[in-house]
Image (cartoon, rainbow, N blue to C red):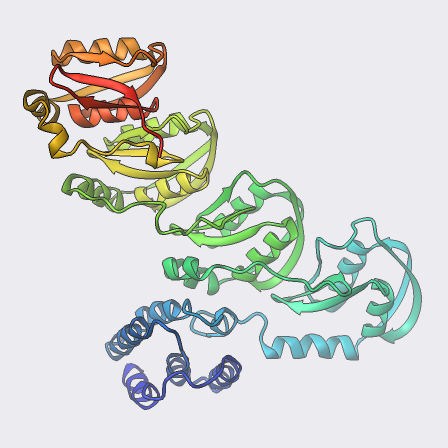
Length: 496
């Protein structure tokens, strides 16, 4: 199989990117109908085009080598990456039988149209709600019929017909103000003149979560939700697909949806559309929420800059766990993770540690779990001296002192970088925290007169350097420090 794939790729790859997306879709469909998987993959590689020529060329070489070595699953992942370049090929990608995700194929549409044109129906609807009318048509045809959220829930249908074609019966039942479209494996009823638009996954979400995308795209699902809460829907999807789902911003609403043998990706989009939400992939999980625009922003989670911080991230990548939080305060979540990982967790003052965390995820890297928890609350985190620092505005975290600043008082500077200590402050007044530091370090601390010494400090650290401990403690209450010839001066943090 791999050898035939290799020969076909050699024939197709030299002719780059001159076919349009429509030609691609038609050609790909025809080749898969002929069960020529290798030729279809080669066709897919052939028609990609982007300004990022080098990235595409490199990815195509990886597809070529992986296929030649028989790693078709690896080749699939690289092809998914290609789909993220300019030119929206997501619908075409879903036709790949490699991932078994073609619920809205040409054949499906033809079958539905054939049913609508050939079936006979008798109707007697004395003011029946549109939702019930849709359920009736679904029962007698086997077609998935969905009512768009833009349809007035109080709308009713009144008509009486005998032995008419299904199309005429549907037109009469839904009236002049409604029409329907065939999308996502369903016949969706929506207001006439208002196209029904499904939310789309972002290219960045697909590119960064190709394995998850493939897993979801391979699955189809039958479901029957009758006023089911969003949280219950997420639990159902988690159990049925084996993947993790995160509700961003505690979305509310009820889902009423009945579907048979629809691709999971389309199920997700239909559910999100019904609730007026978005859906996307990030950090190895499916996210559902109102605003997911910053979910895959690359700058949210900075790369560790020191060897110690790189070791911390590596440990977080190596460990996996199943986590269940049912309304647990964020501060307790951090405390739990601190205990099980042995790492230091620090929160800046703009983090609400009382916010409830509802999360159920399984077999997930701790790093991905932390990103899920943070991104769902608009938080970022970075590394500082082996600690994980969380906040909404990490710019408030003062940079480490420069060599020039440390040179002002070499003796204190040496103590800052060599002495280690642990802290366990829980709403401790700042004056007591400073007294503790004076006692364990022997250093002189002078506090700016503008600072409220009753500020509550919450910080738990194990074996941190004095420099990092002092910086993190003060950052948690919007303060910073500098060195003078006399010792350490604590002052308000400078705003950016």
